[in-house]
Each structure stands twice: as C-alpha cells, then as structure tokens.
Image 1 (tube, rainbow, N blue to C red):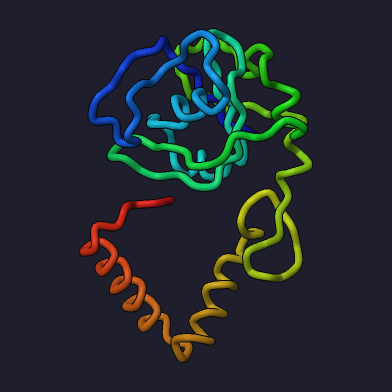
Image 2 (image 1 turned 30 degrees about the vertical axis):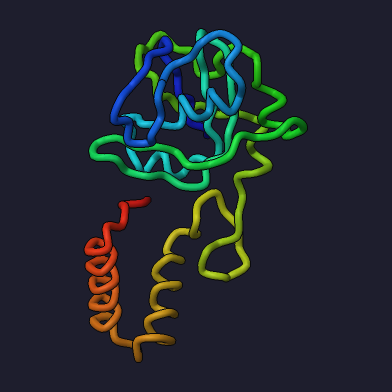
Length: 183
C-alpha cells in the first residue's frame, strides 16, 4: 500500500514547520517542487504511515510526484514525510507519474492509502532480527522481542531494567539537546 497525498491550490505560507514558503500545486511544477509541497505536514496516523514505502503526490487530479519514504517526522499533531523523488525508470514512478489519481475517491480527505501493483516487488524486506526471513514490515510477528532480548543479553548483562534506564537516559539527553521527535 502507498500513501496518496492530494495537494490543494497554491498558497504562500509563513512559519511552516518544514521551512517552505508555499504549499499546494501550481501549473508546470516540477516533481521536486511537488514533493516539497506535498511531503507534509498532514494529519495522519504515524503507525499506518510508517508502514508505507511510497508516497504519491497528486494535484488537480494528476500524479505530480512519486517518492520513496525513508522516515517520518512529527510536528505537533501532524506528520511530514522524509524521502526522495523516484527517478525515471523506477517502475512505480513510471506507472503513475502524469496519470490520474490512483486513489480517486469521493472523500475530501487529502490523505488516502491505495494498493499499487507495481510496488509489490519492493515491499518484502529482511526481518530486523537477523533471522533471514522476509516480510512486509520491519519484523516478522514476535521477532522484535527476540531482537530486543538479544541486545539486552549482549549489552546489558541480561537486565531489562538496565536497558530501560539506558533508553530513558538517552531520550532525556536528546530532549535536553533539542532533539526532534522522529518515528
């Protein structure tokens, strides 16, 4: 599944959390401009958005850019995507760029999710625990616990309490240094 983000009309903005001077679409905008305008900030569930690999940016009913999502950043109650615009020759980009909105619905919600058949070959990835299995998420079910426990045994003398205290200290240090929330 991919996230589709539908741009409204062009408008200038001030105090944008991403430092942009405009949002929305305008005639003849480049793919890069469409990505910058469309990558955020949106009201969306981070748990669902973080499972998506691709984002389709739509303006005036047409796909203006297709990007690969590498990270999400949280800005209050809104989310922005980090990533890169796909280049010519990428099967997902080539299938949708310049074509009608693949998630065209009667909804006025600018955020939608849609299955793109061309993305299927990119969705499987190795399980994060190192077991050698693959899936469409970071870990196979239950394997995240295996990975955490392996690290607790290797780096914290098997003590979950030491691990939790270390995580809390790192987060506190990051917050004190002005670190941003990332997902």
